[in-house]
Image 1 (tube, one colour):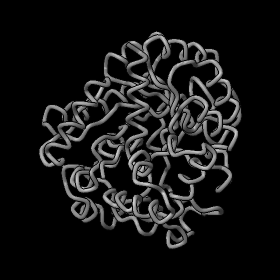
Image 2: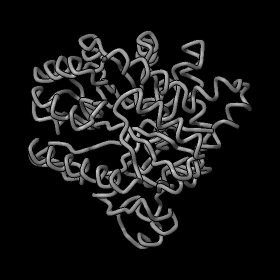
Image 3: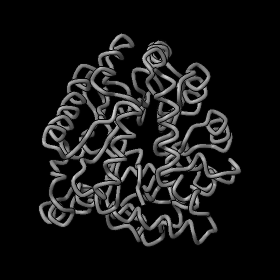
Image 4: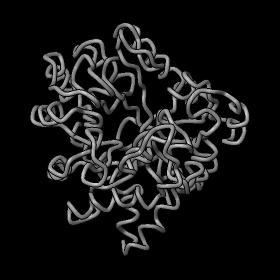
Amino acid sequence: MIVIDAHLDLSWNALNWNRDFTMTVPEIRSLEAGMNENARGNNTVSFAEMRKGEVAVCLATVLARANPKGKTMLDFKSQEIACAMAQGQLAYYRILEDQGQLRMLKDWPALEAHLREWKSSIGSSCPLGFILSMEGADPILSPQHVLSWWEDGLRAVGLAHYGVSAYAHGTGCEGGLTSPGRELLTAMEDVGMILDVTHLADESFWQAVELFKGPVLASHHNCRALVPGDRQLGDDQIRYLIERDAVIGAAFDAWMLYPGWVQGETANTVVSLEAVVDHIDHVCQLAGNARHAAIGSDLDGGFGTEQCPHDLDTIADLQKIPALLRKRGYPEADIEAIMHGNWLRFFQAAWLRSR
């Protein structure tokens, strides 16, 4: 079954982890064997595995934070440096486009044509499609810089990641939008950019969705009612997103699936793909239908198999989700909607609206 995955940090992995996605997963794991950094040798994503799993389209990110006090591979001393890093990540995607590995999808006709080609070639010769997204908006130097990024192909933006960005408060802190953040939302709405509410602190979330009248999605988010924490969506937020006809992609990071997970201590044997389906089902129950739940795996988003459901070895195992949904009584039309149809409907509406 065709999959649309709304969150993969492909370029960040390639540039920061020095991973070559044209290699197989076993080849990448072999090269990283013995490395001490977290998640080394445990990756789940390669282009071959995406094809095997029929991941015809993904939202592929650029990701760089302006955080002078930060000490991770995500943190840079200024917005200018973060912008340059994100532009480097974009350059990686463009190189792979030139090689025929990837295809950037910027509008509805392109997405529609891509899926038609994918189906006719059964994925064998068709490039992997991607929609460019930004996780944390620091690489946008100012609201006036939105148009430049739009012309580069950027179509979805999350205002913050972890901590405080130039525009909003994110996971792990409390607070609302900054003054430039409000201006940024106006500029995004003007060009037709999509707002990704993922990672927003609660106050920033509510301020953003009140101000922004354009299309809204949650690319990789789970449910606070099942696993507590500010990284998850509360039921009131989920109900609001449903009212906005948003789609919510379920994330596969084990700490978002298992209450009390302790990074580096809890074994992934405690969580299976059934937990992912629990979060998908919770969104469907709140909605009263299957129109708003989807996939946003975040696989290899700073973690690997050690922090995935134990029955997922590579991204190809996204194909196990349909059987789990069938076991819970979901009809085939709803399963197809969750695996790809809801994202298709969302982008068709978002992009035709922006014309």
